Image 1 (cartoon, helix red, strand yellow):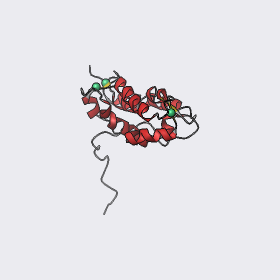
Image 2 (spheres, rainbow, N blue to C red; image 1 turned 135 degrees about the vertical axis):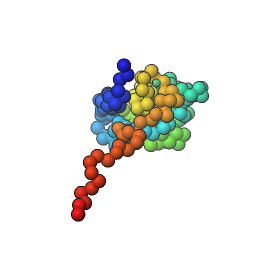
Image 3 (cartoon, rainbow, N blue to C red; image 1 turned 60 degrees about the vertical axis):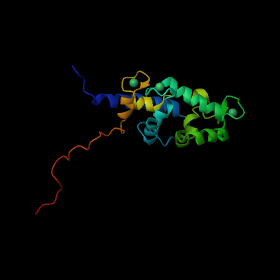
Image 4 (tube, rainbow, N blue to C red; image 1 turned 135 degrees about the horizontal axis):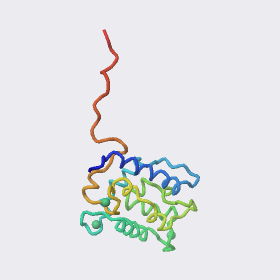
Length: 165
Ligand SMILES: [Ca+2]
Ligand SMILES: [Ca+2]
Ligand SMILES: [Ca+2]
């Protein structure tokens, strides 16, 4: 009794929207929405978080990866990244450059705590972790969704054009 796959993407988007609104509702409006180009960037970058190179990318690996970059960028070691320090991070990984400072500064206090990066739902998992086990298997990463679009174009519906003679 296989369930149809179609509902899955809708549920994910439905769950993600309130999460993003909660996390990102800090006054500034985000140019990015769920399933957006930025979410795709996260999904595409996931392979770089596979710290033990076993092909699976876990939530813990993402957090470890982010923590490593964070520590490297936290020049004065106060546990927060101000914008100048974030630039160092963004130079290391262009994903952070793409996302931008405001994306992670959830409480908009002008500095980013590590928790603001690691506690934030990672769009790559929201998009690609089909079985929600906090592990992106190689198969799940390969099946990266392109937003709401199916991989193949649907056949054109109806007649080809209104031209008549
Ligand atoms: Ca791994
Ligand atoms: Ca700092
Ligand atoms: Ca998974």
